[in-house]
Image (cartoon, rainbow, N blue to C red):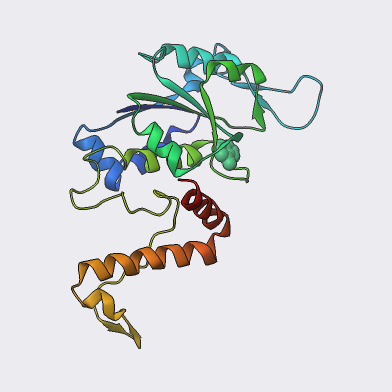
Length: 231
Ligand code: ADE
C-alpha cells in the first residue's frame, strides 16, 4: 500500500511513522508513506497558503490552489482514494479502517487554520472525522487513520498477532487479558484461563466480551442484540 500525506507540518508526521509497527512495515517495504508539504505548491511569493474569509469573520481560511496543485502533482492521484480529514467528515470506525486497508493508494489531506475553502471538497472522495472534537489540524487525525489502517494489511502485524479478535472487529469490545504472574497483589487470574480447556476458555471469553460491551458501550450492545435477532 502507498499513502501520500499532504500537510503543512511534515515533522508532525515523519517521526511517528518511523517508529514501531508502521516504521517496520515501511522498512520491510510492505508500505510506502510519502509526506508532502503543500506549502511548496503555493504560487504566492511568500508561500502563503491561507487568506481571510470572504464575508468577514475571525481566522484564516486555507486556499484551494496550493492543495489542488499538490494533489495533482501526486503520481497516480487519479486512481488514488483521496481523503480529507475534517471534523465535519464521517465518524471514523473500525469498519472504515478495514475498507481503507484494501486500497492500493490513499492520499490524505491534513487541513490547518480555521477551515478550508469549500471549493477544495470536490477534489476528494471521502471526508473523515476521528471524533466530535476539533484538533489544531488534521495531522494527528491522519495518523490515527494511518495507524488503524496499516495494521490490517496482511503481514504487517506479527504472524501470531491477530486482529480478528480486536475490539470492534465483530461489533463487541474485546475480552479481558491476563499474563504472568497468576496472582498480582491479591488479584488472581480467572481459573478457567489456567484450565487448559480451549472450549471453556473460548466460551468464557465470548461471555466476557458481551458483558463488557453491555456495561461499557450500551450503544454497541443494542446493535449486537439487533444483529442476533436479524442476522
Ligand atoms: N481536523 C480537526 N479536527 C479533526 C477531527 N476531529 N477529525 C479529523 N480531522 C480533524
